[in-house]
Image 1 (cartoon, rainbow, N blue to C red):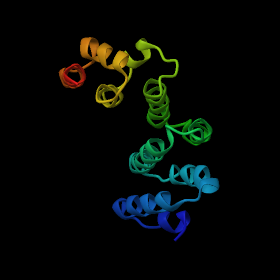
Image 2 (cartoon, one colour):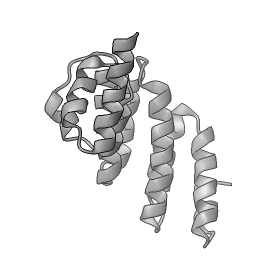
Image 3 (tube, one colour):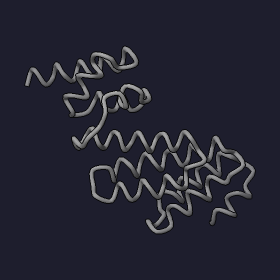
Length: 155
């Protein structure tokens, strides 16, 4: 079943599942085209949700490796008209920088979403965790960071 066939189905739940299946099996050279085509679905909320799941899965697999940056740039082009997806890609890149101890700015972390702050608070970068323990956006983020710091000091 191709994307055109998927688009013919009136049930957005069926289309969502079909998109996830297609995205889960797409070959690397065809990924950007498929993402772009999924994002043409008339139900933009559903289409963005399917692409977000794919983006999160792929970014989690790729961020530690050398192919991440090229992948992120190509996906960013497909997602440029979708602010939430573009933001998530930027946050994955910030998460990558924090986790791999590449250059990053504390203000960028503090301005990021709850999703990224919580993911980072549960991570391994002591500097980032200390920042979030002190100034994370929510109580949950601050507590997660403090718990991580306490476990480190006990080790």
